[in-house]
Length: 445
Image 1 (cartoon, helix red, strand yellow):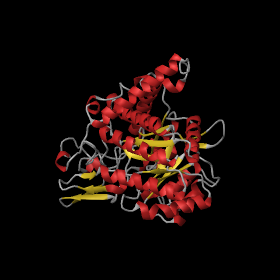
Image 2 (cartoon, rainbow, N blue to C red):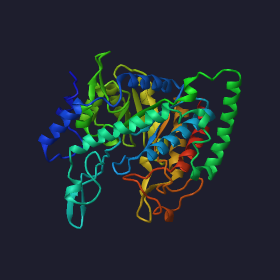
Image 3 (cartoon, rainbow, N blue to C red):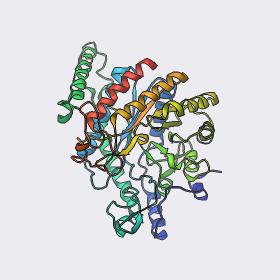
Image 4 (cartoon, rainbow, N blue to C red):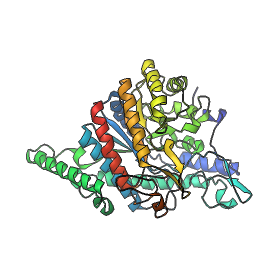
């Protein structure tokens, strides 16, 4: 029988070694008493939207920071990130003719899995940086020691972020009459920004026509945006503490976000993360990499979506541009044959990371686009719907990923390399990707 704590009897990968168990228990109890960050009804709404994606009637845009920061928290950064996601959604919807379901990697994305639990510098070994929910980046014993109080800080910052997101999406900022105003100064001067401005002018003319005929004056969808939150459910003490029993249905929901996902490093069928997320009723995702076999993926579907509920499970492919053509088709066929109504999304970021000649961890925009293109091609071959993309981006004018229409060169990386962990697309590159993806969606309709 599942309950929010049954994961504790399973092997739990990527968990911190908390030095003070009594303090951790105190923090868990405090988190268990605080108000939920999201509500069960909102999670059910997202599941309905994702069911439309599973049917091929909508497209999932899941995007945001690689890891949120306690240090860089401010309203401007949140607004700019939201602005780029709204721009991408407008491009995808208007250009492809299908609604874009907007899910942010935000208000909870404070923890990151790492390839090694420890890091050694000049003969000193310390825990790896696991995100601000756990420890801090500077290489000292005090900074790298996991601190349970950070779980409370993550909750408080998530609550503030959600408050801002709701204000922006419901208070006029997301009104489609503002599509021109969403173009930031440094994007408006770019090729991508000019292309977006042209599309925004078309939307503006269409809205004026609709209003002249009395069609849109009372349409909430014109004036507000529906926006959901998600993060990787990595630190299980935090997720368990924020899990609540819904008073309407008696079912359990993880109220830390509308959607949670399991990472490639924690998707073991007998592991704690699969055990925890199989029992909550939120929409859930699971990253699947090039080592995934058809038996693996059907096994995940059996455990995570035993009732075959459309919108329940999103499988997020992260293969690498050079591996998609060989590794994805057998997985598509296996899930199709087993008749699981999943959403398929493409994460073109994590399989294409490398270290540049300048020593910066980076990705090339051409590889990102190549993986997305191969993802769509594999779905055309299988007769399945390429349901979405899952990308790491920022609204800031950073130089972390190479390439793009206004190409970032290796020597440019050091100019504004600001990520806490993985390299992100900047706003120009994000808009460029949205236009390219919209062009790929059309032939699959």
